[in-house]
Each structure stands twice: as structure tokens, then as C-alpha cells.
Image (cartoon, rainbow, N blue to C red; front, side, top):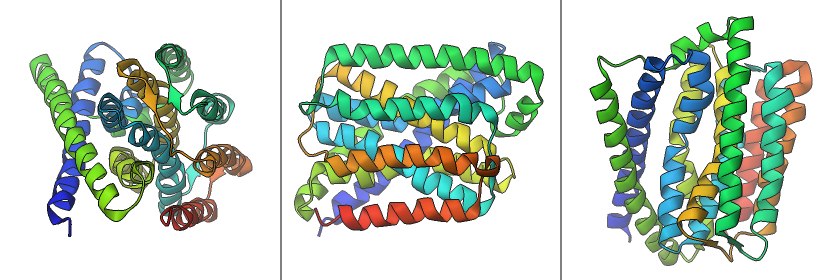
Length: 317
């Protein structure tokens, strides 16, 4: 039995959650001191900050030459975010969808999802492709900033986000301490997670890609899960949509981008069906949201059923 490795795996997931929370708290507080509104922070700092575990884990895996885990983490996290996190959130409380999500953010998520198979043609993501991806996340962030700024003036959405954005800390030194501590804990957690995931994958006779798509992806998505479930319980489930879609865009553009800048990503075990499921749930989400501008409980159940079926198909590989 791999009790030691399983213990360290569970510990690493806890460290990733704590590190991500500290990073989001410190970064959100710094953003408030810089004059950003709650809406802007929610759509950028919080959405991207909850993806920090994916970023650190994939960068570490890429640097260690474990490209299947790096890409599997991105692909699996995007599937998990939509099928499980949004599915569960909708089951708790139907999610009202704002027009900006349907007209702007969701189409961009679908577009970058369609880029994924093109990027890994030949089983690798090179440095120059990483540059293209990083430029893409910078452009998306700047554009989202201006859209959020205009929306904050025209509507009262900023009031909703004030409840979800972490409160400002006593001073900037606490902010910097939280950011630095969060990054440090994330790095340690990522190293433990990747190293022990590889050991478990080999012992169980499954590929590193499967471990990356399932255990690693679900573990690194815990900050998004907690953020979305809490938002649903507080009856602000629309925040979950922005968080998930923003995180999915960040995963492909930033996580894959920075990981390939650190070291070219090589992968031989990411299959056609895995990519097809990620693209399918991204595309399916758009018509589900479009019906009555709401993601209802039955649609949340459909998404979770898709994920269950995917796991049943995936695990015997």
C-alpha cells in the first residue's frame, strides 16, 4: 500500500488550498489599495488567483519533464470546473447569467479551448507558443478590465462582488507577507503533489496523464470549488460563472503559457477523447446558459452526469 504517498498527496492538496487562499487575500487587498473596484478584483485577481495552484503545479511538472501531468492538469481542471463546480453550484442555487458572460467571456473560453489541440500537435508545446499564450492572457485581462470598469459604472454589480472579495488587511506589509507566504506554500505543495502523484500513478498502473486529469486537476481546483459553493450559498451564484470561465481561460493561456516558457512541454498520453470532452463541455455550457439566461438545477445535474461518465470511461485506461 502507498499510505505514505497518499498522506503526502492529501497534505499537498491542503497546502495548495491554504497557499491559494493566502495569495488571493494578499493580492485582493493590494488591488483595493490600488483603487480597483470589487467587480474588477472579482473578475481578475480572484478568478486568476484561484488558479494559482494549477499554475504552480503545471510549471513544476513542466520543469521536471512531466509534461503529461502539466497538460493533464490544465485539461482536467477545465473539465472539472465546468462539469463539477458549475454543476454542483447550479444544484445548490440556479445561476443567473449576465449578458457579458454569453457575449464575451464564454465565446473566448470556447475559442481558447479550440486552440488546445492545435497547440499540442506533435505532442509538445514550444517556447514560442508559450509567448503567444502569455500575450493572449495579458490582452484578455486588459480588455476585461475596461469592460468591468464600464459595467461597474452602468450597473450595481460591484455591490454583489463586495461580499465575495476578501477584505483589505491592516497594512501593505501584511499584504506582501500573505502574497509571499502564499507563493512559498504553493511551491512546496506543488512539489509534494507532483512527486507523489507520479509514484502513485506508476504503482496503480495508470498513466501520468490520467493522474493529472483526475487527482491533480481536482486538487488544484479546490479554491474554485470553495469560492463557487460559498457564492451559491450566499445566493450570489452568478459570481461562480465568472470565476470558472475566467479560471478556464487563465488555465490555457497563462498556465500552459508560463509552463512552456519555463520548459517545452512534451506529452504522449493526452488522448483525443480527453481533449474532445474539454471542448464539448465548454461548447455545451453556452446553450445551457442561454436558455432563460440561467443555469438551472437540471442542467447542473446534466453536467455532473457527463463528468461521472467521463471518469468511468477514463479510469480503466
